[in-house]
Length: 72
Image (cartoon, rainbow, N blue to C red; front, side, top):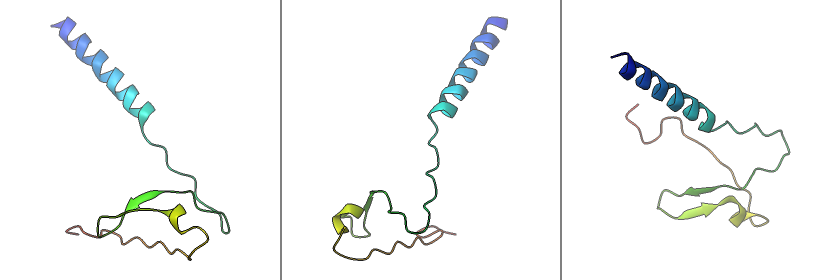
């Protein structure tokens, strides 16, 4: 009984430690005038789009709708 508890506790500690170590870190905020880092995303019609595709061609405005496409 004690051996099972010890194994379970050890496994839980390892998983928690690994999860915290591997958790994504938030990106630093950009200052006014700074260039945005290149990123890749999917458009509403399923095309893959990169910010760098528009470099020097057009102005880009990103707008994120809070809770878009959700039941909220």
